[in-house]
Image (tube, rainbow, N blue to C red; front, side):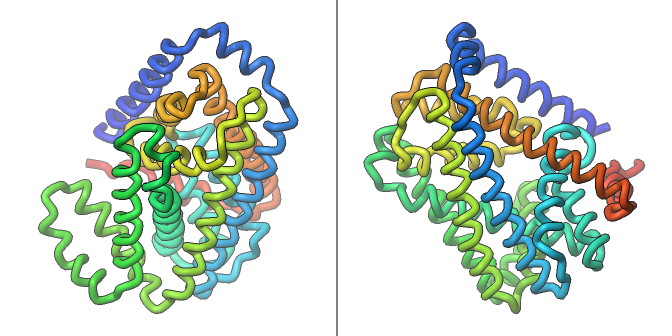
Length: 332
């Protein structure tokens, strides 16, 4: 009951935020921008996004290999887009990360929990890379031109990234922190910190793999930033690339907050807020965000096709059932 209530609240928040940001943009202007979008730039952004996913699949492969599970990068790429399908089309049922973990278990062995832990580590390293990219430009003129508070936020992000990497790589510090998690006042924070620290413990003897994954994650985030930068050209904008290096990590950090469904509404509000401060018209900023969502949906459509093909050939047989069992709420 609690799970369903939380999901309903998140749906209401997403719809509310989306309605709010659309109400602040003239509908005629938004429709005109979307109708006049240059397809070649959207396709270029889609291609760059695909390259980014390939980097994501490769970093996932490295983590799995360090745990003795050898799975080909093409299979993991397919699992990545299958995860996007479940995130974009079935956000209220099966999570994409759980599907990815179940798929890797079926292919490479291990338990579902172990494979889900690997996915969690990959996600966390990606977050640290995002915070690092944003923090690296914390004192730039671009950051302060958006808002005087932005450099402080990005500086805090850089500090969190450094602290996170230190916790991940320092075995004594991480184990000491794990013992102290029980004294953290909020249950959600305790549970999250505990999962993070235990997940990195799995790689306590593989620091080289973590560092390699971190640098691959920087490349992954770079391609995502390029993908957003390219989308603007579809609407005739030419905001400097450095602005997107600042804005995209900030938007991703906002999207981490569990207040919406799949970032819908949260992403659009954040892009409009930040990009209008960089001189972009609100209608174009919103159109850019919506176009990026269309690209994600397009990747999800491909993932849906991969999922159907695998199910037909028996290559992912049982993965969906395992994911459903893991995500089903426990009986009272």
